[in-house]
Image 1 (cartoon, helix red, strand yellow):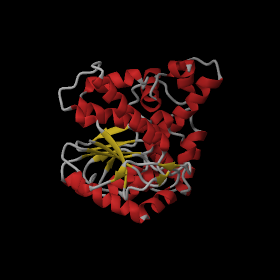
Image 2 (image 1 turned 120 degrees about the vertical axis):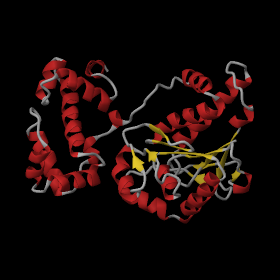
Image 3 (image 1 turned 135 degrees about the horizontal axis):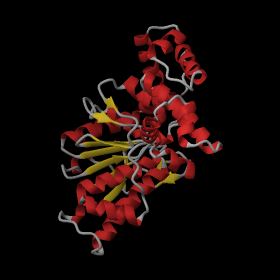
Image 4 (image 1 turned 45 degrees about the vertical axis):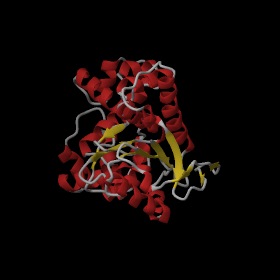
Length: 327
């Protein structure tokens, strides 16, 4: 059984795509188009709330549920998925985690995990799993714009915010709202088999998206820390050449170690990664607004080696410079 455990403020898009992916898998199996070696009942699903009452979505609409979430009915073969609650700021996440219902859900999923259930969450709901303690010592991802807040709050979790999906064994986490599709396909692959998940992805025209780096908006992550701001300004002013960490630290009037700590606290990345993202953002602008060749763009953002530029660009954006220009 797959339980979609919904909270007030749930993103309807995430919930809906989760239901559709599991439902599609079930229909493909029932029609004989997809083969499954396990009991097909693993694809049965329910939408549940803490008390069995409808919840109010982030849009303000009421979302009906199939009943209440009862821990006593959870088995080791079950899956509990928490769709995200759209939260754009760290303050809103703090409010979310301070809610009584969220605290109760965190306690319940921790106990469900102890019973062997598979857990999954996307977007801000990853904070709920972390608060439950089920990610301690494990890898996880979260929505890209809250990565720094997550890292600051949950130091015992190894955060890999570039990833769209992180599989930590009995707990799976995914990035922002539509990364819930990636999460649900991974869950279908786990309970019904990879071939079923691949067929669902084809029927629903869901592309493979291993990274959410390409969706990150550096301006959204821009820090209020004056040292980080100074370092950013220095990179922008010297985007045509390589800059060292020592140079960045001098521009920010702090030590390299202090700069690394403050950049990570503000942006959730290392100073070197910050530099790379600024240069790639500039390169993307040039690719989209000029006729400069890829090699010329590489030189304009400080890469003497165009091949190295292509590798960094693909890692961060998720596609080649040529593909980006064509899109």
